[in-house]
Image 1 (cartoon, chains in turn yellow, green):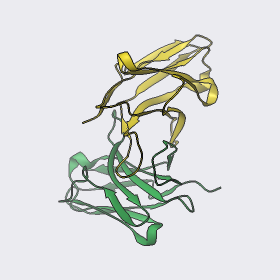
Image 2 (cartoon, rainbow over the protein chains, first blue to last red; image 1 turned 30 degrees about the vertical axis):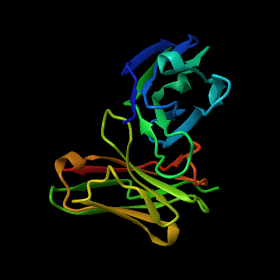
Image 3 (spheres, rainbow over the protein chains, first blue to last red; image 1 turned 180 degrees about the horizontal axis):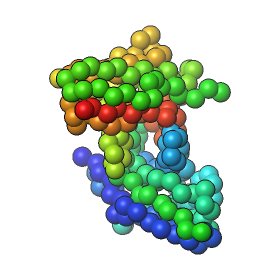
Length: 116
Length: 115
């Protein structure tokens, strides 16, 4: 069965500093990979996704992520964080190929705290 | 465009009671998902509908949970009888596609507390 590991439960970053959130997955084949953000009182929002091709993907709000097959990782990065980036971040996977049962499997999340 | 609507936003019940959550997806969205998010964990898929048919309910505790999607639009998730461990936020999500592209649109969730 597929699984997603986010090793950092909490991360604290100073405003303006760079950010990297880690994600590792376990799956039989290369799955579809996603990052979602959940702000307090709001629904989950898709930041970016990887299906195939270029391993560096760009998302909304200045985020990017890099897929590394050899490390089964899909880490999220941002060069300079803003106070509004404080939220819960979830990495997720879904079966590639499409069709049928293809719901997302989420990691446990990383809580991002921004220091002024 | 209206988002995914869920109700009620909050519900407190005692164990062994029943509860129902309602979801109205974005108009025209073919696929609907229910997720359970326990405090401190990521969302866990309970059931996936495509139109009004069930695609995947392998993680739905069928002895107490049931869900339906009437006419391929609104959906209801029911818990009967509730247990303490059912305390969680129940998230509904919809997608315009039959195939998962990751572009799921989530509602704000229904928070259940079982006492």
